Image (cartoon, rainbow, N blue to C red):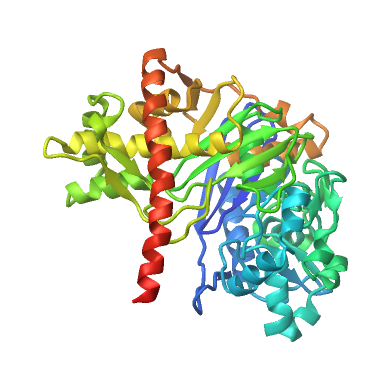
Length: 499
């Protein structure tokens, strides 16, 4: 009987833990919901103690289910960015302020206007946003100086859980990237001073490689989780990085897309061009020298759920499947209908928080099947928009995951629109599996990417040459409409302001 590898993924709204055999087979999974507090406009917080207790409960359930089995290691990943502050004794110094917190938006605008934010673009090729440690530290220093004074270290969510489990503190290269890392040195750089955070510098934890040993489960953590005292735990990493490793990706030219509630385009590269205001974000790969370019359009599979809900009072899976089948019978281009998928604004490959969605090209002959096809195409075109902004893709197949990857129609549309083969996987645990592989790597079993390779059921969607040509025309229409909508939106805002 083989030892079990454990993985934990601490998300914003849910915590998952899984036990794996070394071949990647899941033995057991446990999950807990977590609560995000919004005590004031723009605030997005979590109680750090409550998050730890939820992780401990999750692990206790998992270890109970695996009674009689022996554990080899534990790996961690979790939500990134935000501001998780601990005092000199390792206790929370303030509520965790999350990656999507916008309380310091006015200060962010001032940093951008002054040119200070450009240091982040030139250092780690990322546009600064309000939910990063730099902006949130500036807020804490001014609004809660007592908490700022108590802050001894600033970490991320998964680092905090690692501290609770082992008593040791570390961050990995992917979690430590934004906003201070300079890619030319792979260390914290000029952005610290440029953003007025000199007093934060000694509170930052120097990055290490995920897959190294963070520490061992303490006696206190063993009592809380049911894990054996002394079990090795690896340095925690970013959830997205763990997912990429769980898919076996570590080389420039590879790409992965997520068609979840929102969408994400991840392109691995070995070079970036410094810019004042880059498009999207960049993080260091946790194990290789590759850089992960990250684009996160605001709308993904949720767009199709929204459209289905307009036509079905129940909104059940059967209604969504029926609508998907109707869309599959419509030719590329949706008979002239184009969906601009800005239901909740847009954040990649451009930022416009108050831009809104639209259908273009409808006529009295337009059917609900046409519109369903247009919604699927619009979200796929937004993925291509991100790829075009990055200069295109290599010829390698694209790994696709998320709820949208369960639709054959949608997968084929994405392959045809982007013009690259798309590979889907029956597994949806890549982040957890990646975390478990980091833990196993920390015990000397091998590299995380090599360990992550397992037998999986995949499906390949090849782009059709004729449909690809037709979608090139649809893409040009989409891109022209996007530019026009943004220009018109600015004019309409000006009119509204005058009123």
